[in-house]
Length: 436
Image (tube, rainbow, N blue to C red; front, side, top):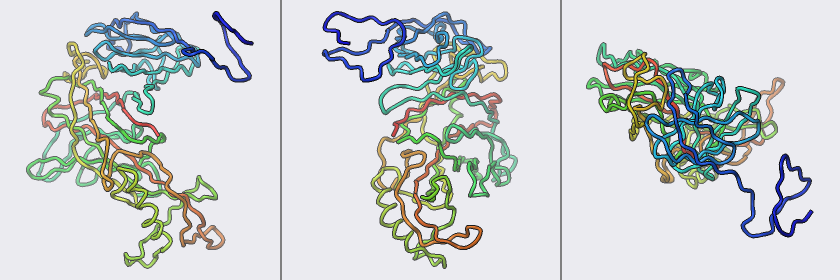
């Protein structure tokens, strides 16, 4: 069918067995644009009294205030999307259309959309009611991912004797999936699988200090994300902590990286080779010249050519804690109201008067620097080691292996106060990342 002039209006579904093309300049699919003002607040029951309903298509939020900062999604229709652009000047909370609906797996939760002019797509994946939605930004290869709310607790620092710390004054989560909190107790931190190096996930978290109480926070992890990101640009932790400087000055953020090299059988990519390799100049009896050649002539140049991977190049579990990282504190406009559990905590993250901690990470790293790049599993190359393994009957050559760089990351919040406690801490992380 060919339309030479005029317009064609279609109501319903359009099914095509071939390509659909527009031959005139400027033609294309035009989505409905709705300009909307936010209204209502987030109730302490975890929902909102907003009447500002978004539409399928593009929604431009041009107004929000300290007592009008909420909107809600339309009634769910599987496969449809709502795009939200916030240019109101403050953060806006997006709620499900119905009680019991979920956003990013959080039932009756909300997504905080910053006022940055970026498009955030809410995709409906579940209908009938109450509906399920997933959200991410749509800004090319740079995207802001809004996570589900993470809950935990932080105690105060207690010093019963110099050299030991017994309070749980930190909360940590690793790759946004494994949540843990704890501290060093008699030198043994909370851990999971850390003494069983063939199993994932693994983590250790802790906070040691010297006799002058100078903290040295750290997280060591080997929990690899399922999504491979080229780099993390920044992380914003939207919290339910009061924005009062007296409190936020006692909060520190810490990040860590862990690195490993994984080898999988080319004949069975799901099977991991866990045998070790030794360099031929280390003095170990089980040296492998084939691996040494690969390490020196393939992996090392690969790491040098991909910034943030050059050091340290490890073949073991790998973990590197760097201590406290700078964070910028900003406060959600409005008056802080305690949620009842603690005078320093609101009921939900992102409520008026609560604090946001933003960590901006470097965009470029030296070739020999270990940075927040190439996260997840990255294919390096294949090679055949001079190794044998027992297959249950006899020793046979390992054969061709596929080598991957596997990098993990963790983040923690630490309380430096000996008097403040945060028994019901809630964090809604927002990750600004560059995709593959």
